[in-house]
Length: 186
Image 1 (cartoon, rainbow, N blue to C red):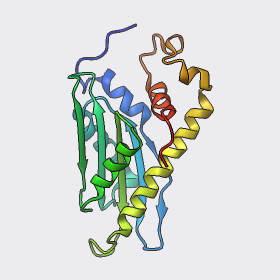
Image 2: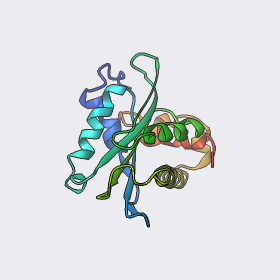
Image 3: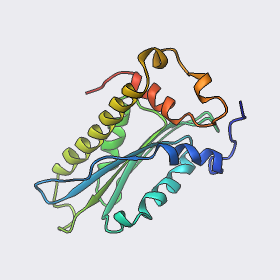
Image 4: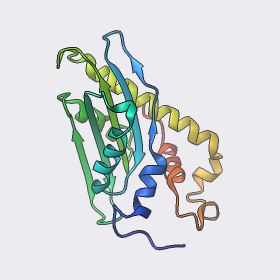
């Protein structure tokens, strides 16, 4: 096997967030706000701004009003635990996303919610959190199902399937598989 990359922003290291970046279904709620959740595997906080740029540069995201996100990372680069949440223009939103990651016991994931809205800022109140929570949970549940479908349980339970990832340098889906094999937090 090849040595792990030492620079979190190298092409090799960024291949993981890029290859695992997944967006949920965009949904407009009765409150006329539209939300979409996005998730990917990250190994270092330095990768987070790059992932956000990747998303924000997409033509379909030019009118997004708010990008709130959170991550929990145990970095292979420095062995430290990094936790962070960003509310953007939705006070408390990042904290709610971080709370969800924590309750579900998920690590090395960046969870982002983009929100489109033309109404006055802060008009949603606590409804904002309900929408964000629902979007994140739906996306994580979808991924959980996809992972279960793609990987037989014995492969997930048997730890890393080294043979299948040997030489590819990409272990994104197996890492997701391990994350989601840890159990369902409702």
